[in-house]
Amino acid sequence: VSDVGLTTRLQQFLTDVQGQSNHCLDLVLPDEETHPAVVHRAMRYSVFAGGKRFRPALVIAAGRVFGAPQETLLNLACGIELIHTYSLIHDDLPCMDDDDLRRGKPTLHKVFGEGVAVLAGDALYALAFEIISRCSDPQVVAEVARATGTMGMIGGQVVDILLEGQPIRPEDLEYIHEHKTGSIITACVTAGARLGDAEPGEVEAIDRYGRNVGLAFQIVDDVLDEVGDAATLGKEPGSDRIKDKNTYPKLHGLEGSVQIATELVERAKNELVLPGRDTIILRLLADFVVQRVT
Ligand code: IPE
Ligand code: IPE
Ligand code: MG
Ligand code: MG
Ligand code: MG
Image (tube, rainbow, N blue to C red; front, side, top):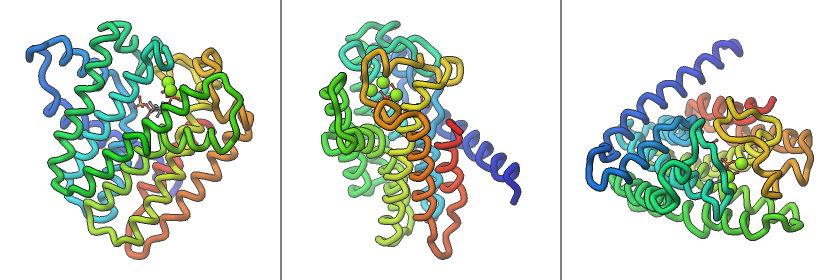
């Protein structure tokens, strides 16, 4: 298949996932009139502001490799997107990254105030697990919960704010990125695979794929903060510099960072040699990460 064919295939897959997840998210979120209306309006404001739906795409792509049922995958995908959206709302608060633009719109606290923004984030997190528990596999629910807590995303976010403006060792920056972003991305693919008939060895390979893609994704996010534009990103570039965040470009330079991300994506794809499994979409999703900056 030509490069154009593969690009079209990825675009088609991403468009399908966006349509399916938006439909599912609309069904699970209380409507805007439901009391107390302000928090439901706030939740919908952030969830439907846009967003690539990259995590739902990973869940569905990984699940399909192992024949997981579509309905179960969609619930997991939407649950994780709710968690991701909650993490962005809190990440943008004045006490965190203090950002004003997200998914092309003013950040939630700018429109609804900080109190409602905190609570809308909490509510999205609760709703996420209500939806994810529908998959009725306790191991999957626990895996996602763990990926969002102090051993995962929150662990990374804590070190991210603690070391803001501080000198940092490369291994500590790697810890931040692997946890604040990599943990959830990894859980997307391992949980998706577990909902199908993946063998333990296959879950391990998918886990390594996820770790490499997850770290690459945050490195690329750092690079885009330096070289991207607000119209494309939907968030204000230069925000990391203003807050003196520890980023890959700061430690490894722009070219060095792109180089590292490219290598990680190659490593991710090398994990996908699984006899009898069609992993083409997972390959294309790995490429997509680094194509954002190359
Ligand atoms: C941004 O994630 C935050 C990170 C973890 C890097 P995305 O770039 O996936 O943001 P949306 O969902 O498309 O808005
Ligand atoms: C955020 O990382 C990771 C989260 C867990 C939300 P960033 O702070 O770099 O994400 P952006 O650039 O604000 O989207
Ligand atoms: Mg942050
Ligand atoms: Mg941020
Ligand atoms: Mg960023």
